[in-house]
Length: 168
Image (tube, rainbow, N blue to C red; front, side, top):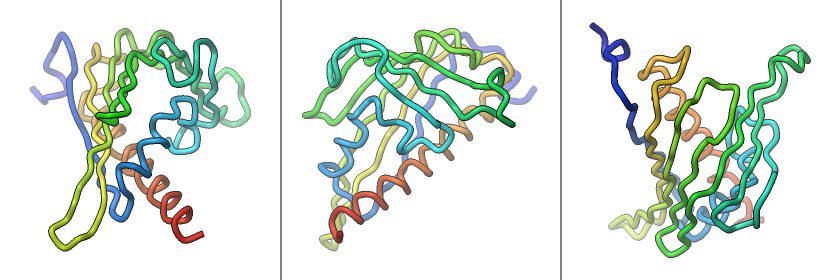
């Protein structure tokens, strides 16, 4: 039996992406701005505050993909609640509280970790870990692959942004 098909009570995992040339101090504010996910996440067309205070636990954001073929019924969306935000550890946690994506339970932690190369180079990495119930219509390996590729694209966009801000 393939790993995806083994019944598990929870899916757990972690992925990470390196951002060479971007310091943790440059990247953390981009990630900590909880309602700016659409700027970085490849599939998100809109992300905005629904309730709560920006930068404070309890903040709820609405995220949605663009409609497929301009059909409003194909919009995939989620409401996510910020559970914690720690600027010292450069870490935040959130949960999906409502969606039409097949999630029953999903909690994630994202952290920006500095990487200092021995050659004096700077960089950082984003670590994204999650615990969730199996997602209807997804295999575990497909879900892992989706998160990993999405985080890689986020890291590329954030690196481009920080490099533009430093040189521009």
